[in-house]
Image 1 (cartoon, rainbow, N blue to C red):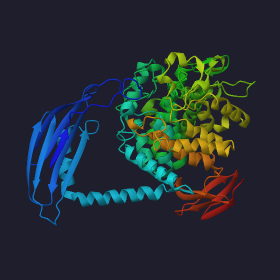
Image 2 (image 1 turned 45 degrees about the vertical axis):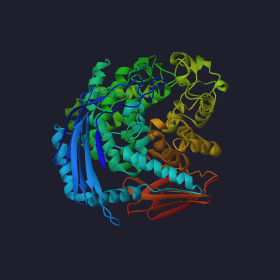
Image 3 (image 1 turned 60 degrees about the vertical axis):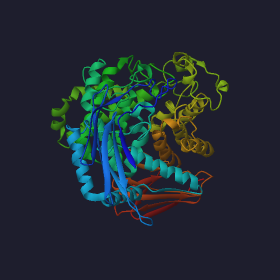
Image 4 (image 1 turned 90 degrees about the vertical axis):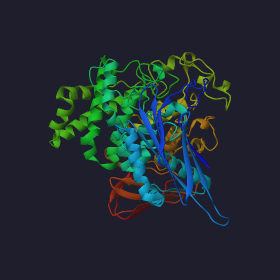
Length: 595
């Protein structure tokens, strides 16, 4: 038998699809290859960023074997000859270790060191460690839908994909296409904080903390990026990145999406509200929230008593570089408001001096943040009772939605982008997403009218869209519509509904599917004044039962056609508002479901 280590690797490309590389290029080249004492070692280097990666491999045979190795054309070929008698068996165990220079100074020596450690501990040890790890994982994030076994398989698949895709060392994050998908070239986006972090914050808070730790790891590059784009101070995180540098090649729908800093701040605040982890806030979180708030204050401008933010792109990438994008402005308001709140908490706790030494934050800045947040301009059309997506959105032509052929692919692949920008047509949820995340900012009629308005002009070309529409439909009591959006969203990869699963799984949609159950059908909201549930069960299901963790309280929530049952898994009580009424859960609480 032969075992091959190959460093001659090209990424998948498609010149007609912007979601993958557009040209065939060698992105990584082999620097050295060596084979000795049964170990094969390749050291490669990325062409542009000059990061190094080392791959060390060793084979262990259960029976005496003849093993020969050869280095050839960027490959190491290991040939193994075994003599196996009839009726007996032999095994070959292949140990592989990969190290990179993001984490280690000398990748070659570290790979060899880890490999030798792995071999000493044997494969059975690693199998047992993996079993223990997964057993702990599943015990914290159980979820079952009564009456739909196919959906349960899909949900469990989604959870496992989220886990294996997550960088849990504070140096890496989650690629938009998961662990091995080549779409978007492995880059990290806002997807993590807005669509995937909720799953981890609610079930695996330790993992969530590591994912947020990545943003702190690249904070210095975010400060450099802010200066590069004209800001005197603050932190502006790149739209798409791996090592902290901006990798977006198209500014209108890339770097112009300033909302990413609001998304990161939102993720940090939600993690804090869910866990109560003040230590994280003092060590990392507050610093990021305050540094991103500085960008908003510098970016915006006071005009006629209102704070305006110009020339940005919101989540909807079919409407780019606009003034006062509703989602962006509301994200900025939330970021600025919490920057002030955290500053005051540091002051009350006697920890302000430490924060000031870190970033030099001043009372004058905090007063400016508060003033900007209070005066934030949020587009509103009184006649329609909706929030326009931005200042110019309602003045544009309507796209002929009947001309869009089902299954034909995204509009952007058949139309020049600047042509699309001139129309009222949305790639994904934008204002609707803002109404979900910041639901207390507008009255119910405005959210309902906005939902109806944007539903008619949204193509859902982004896999991030339908799960949000499902959540808002559930919020508005439109149970069947919520289920229909969810049903499509939950099966995107199984059915290859977006016609691009070949490029990798839709990891953010997997997180969004989880959100649609927890935030949609269970109606969970995480707010400063508590945890709120407004459960709603689709007619197609018999029940929903899942495990989450709130402020250290592990609870199981089960709903069926008649009752909602909240049970403590550990002994730490939790207070919940269910249908607006406060309950002190000390053991188990059962209430009747509303129709």
